[in-house]
Length: 232
Image 1: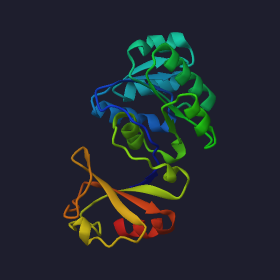
Image 2 (image 1 turned 90 degrees about the horizontal axis):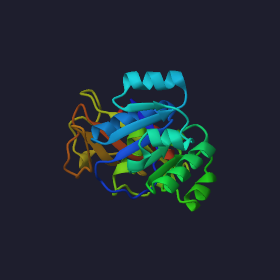
Image 3 (image 1 turned 180 degrees about the horizontal axis):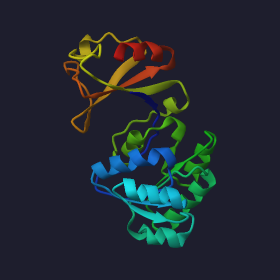
Image 4 (image 1 turned 90 degrees about the vertical axis):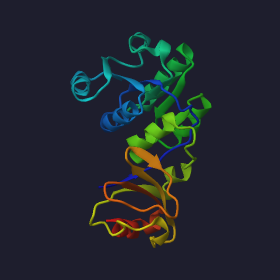
C-alpha cells in the first residue's frame, strides 16, 4: 500500500486529551482510531443519521448525532471539558463557525478543514490553531498535528512541491534487511520515519528495515515514481 500525505504546523501539548471531532467523511475512521490508540478521549459529532449510526457501530468512540454548528449539540458532546475541537466537515464555512464557537465557549485548541488554499490565512487570522487540507492530509498525520508538539512545518508539501509516501515493507521488498545508510534512494528523497511496533521512530543511519514496518519517505515530485519503484 502506498499513500501520500501532507501536513501543517501546530504546537500542542503531548498529553491525554478530550477531543471532539466534527464530521470528517473518509478520514474520520483512521483519525479516531489513531487518537484512541494514543489513549485520548474522542467524541464524534455527525449530522447525517446513517453516517452517525455507522460510526457508532464501527468505532470505539461516543457519537453524537447533530449539527456541530449548534452550541447545544456541542454542549452535549462535552465542549466544556474539550482540549481540542477538530472541524473537518465538507463545508469550510461550517468548520470556521464550529471552531469560533469552540473558542468562544471553551477557549480550547481548534483545527479546521478548508477547501481552498487561500482560506488558510483567513482561518489563521481568526485564531484557528491548525488548518487542514484534507485532500493532501492523512489521518495519521492529522493525529500527529493535534497531539505532538515536535511536528515540523511541512507547509511546502501543501503547496504541491513534494509528498510524504508510505510503504508497507514485506519480505519481498527491495529494501528489506537493508540499513538506512545502505539504501540508494534518489536525490531529492529521504526516509523521514519508520512506523515500528505501533510507534513512529526517526531512523538512524544504522537502522535496519524489517518486514511489517511502514516506511515514510519525503520526496520531491520529480522523483516520486522512482521512489515508488525502489520501495515496492
